[in-house]
Image (cartoon, rainbow, N blue to C red; front, side):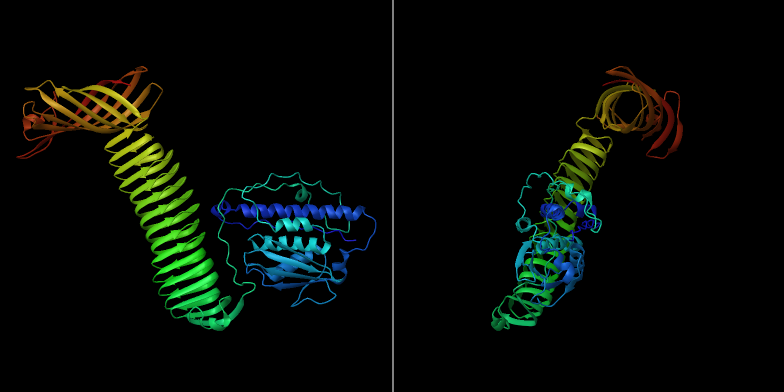
Length: 601
C-alpha cells in the first residue's frame, strides 16, 4: 500500500522588501490550510499503516494512472506544472487529457471568476467528489496546493478540510490550534515526510494591504470570440453574442460593453469591460474596467480600473484597487496601494504604500510614502521618505528628507530639512538648513534664525580689546547657535551704541569644557541720531570652562576688520591696526584682538 509522500512547498519567490511587507491576510490563511492538509495526509498515512488490509483505493492511481483535464485554469497556472505536482503527490503517472474517459480515474481542474479553482475527482467505479479552494498567487505554490487537494480527493481523506479551504478567511485570524502529533516513520518504500511540516503552526496574518491580484485572461462561462464590434451595447455583434463575451479584438464606435478583453480594444467613444482586461484599451472618451486590468489603458478622457498592473495614460486616471505600474495624466487617483509611479498635475494615493508621485500637487494618505516631487506635497501617513517641492507637509510620525521653500514635519522625528523655512515639531535626527528653522530638538540647525524648543539657551556678557562691552543671547541646537546682542563702546572720543549678530558652532571637549567658533558682525551707532559710525566683522575662537552648573567663563583670540566712512572712525584698536584699503568713501583696517566673557546657562 502506498503511503502518500508530501513534498514541501517551494520557498516564496524573492521580491522587493516592499512586496514582502505587502503579504495579505488571505495568503496567510491559505498557508495555514495547506499545512493542515499536510497534517491530515500524514494522519491518513499512519492510519493506513496500522489498519487491517482493505481494498486500497489509494493504490488505484499507481496501478492505472490518473488523467488531468484542465478546463479554464487561471492564466498564472501552467497545466504541465500542475500535472507534475499532482504526479509527485500521488506517486502515479498523471496524463493531461482533453476530456474525461469512462472507467478511468480523472481529475478536472476548473478556474472560477473570483480567482479560486474547483477540482473534482471521478473514480473508475463512478464515484465523484469535488471541492473549491483559494490558491496562492505564486504559480509554484498554487500548483502544490492543488496537488495536495488532488491527493486528498483521490484518497478521500480530507473532505471536511477541503471544504473549509473553500471558505474565505475571516478578517481576524482564528486562534492557532494545537498541531497534530507527528506520525511515526513511514515504511522504507515511501518517501519520508519532512518532520517540521506537521508540527509547524500556522502564522498569524500580518495586517498588510492585499497586493494587486493578477487579472484572469479567461472567464469560465463566457464565450471567447476573435472579433467583436458595436455601435452601442447590443447594437452590433453583441446583438447576437450578448455581452458575456471575451473578445480578442474589439471595436466600438460610440460605446461598447463586454465581459472581458484579452487582446486589443479600440473605441471612438467609451470602452467598458465588466470583468477584466488583459491587453490594451484605446479610446478618445473613456476606458472602464470594472475588474482587474493588466496592460494599458490609453485615452484622452477617463481611465478606470478595479486594480491595475501596467499603465493608465489619460486626462483622468482612477484605480479603485492596488496599482503596480504607472498612472500618467492631469489627475491621478489610486484608492489602493501604489507600487510604481503617479505622474500628473495632481496625484492622490490613499493606499497603504506609495513609491513615487511627480506633479504640481501630490497627496498621499498612506502608511508609507517614498518619494513626492511637486510644487505642493502632502503626506498624511505614518512614515514619509522624501519630499521635494515648493511646499512640503509630512503629518506622520516620521519623515525622512524634505527639500523645498517651506518644509513642515508634524511628526515625532524628522531626518533632514533643507529650505528657507523649516518647521519640525518633533526631534530632528539629521539637520535643518535654511533661513528660519524651528524644531523641538535638533543636533544641527543652520540658519539665520534658529528656534529649538529643547535646545541650548545662554546669556553671555563679553568685552573686546576695543572697549566694546556686549550683553547678548546665544541659543540653538546641540552643535550650532545664533548670537544676538546689544552693547556700548565706552572708550574713544565719544560713546557709541553697539548691536551684534552672529553665527557659531560648538565642540564639546569635556563635561565642563567646550570650544565655540563664531563669526559676528558689530555695528556702531551715534547715540543721538543712530547713524552708523563703523562696522566690525569678527571671527573668534573661544575656550569655555564651566565653573558651576549655571556659570562659565570663556575667552580667546579674535581677528577683526573694521569698515568706516572716515579713517578716524575705522581706527578702533587701542594698539593700532593695519590698513587694508581706503578710498574717498570707505576705509578698512584689520587687527588681532581678544575676547573675554561670562556665560550663564
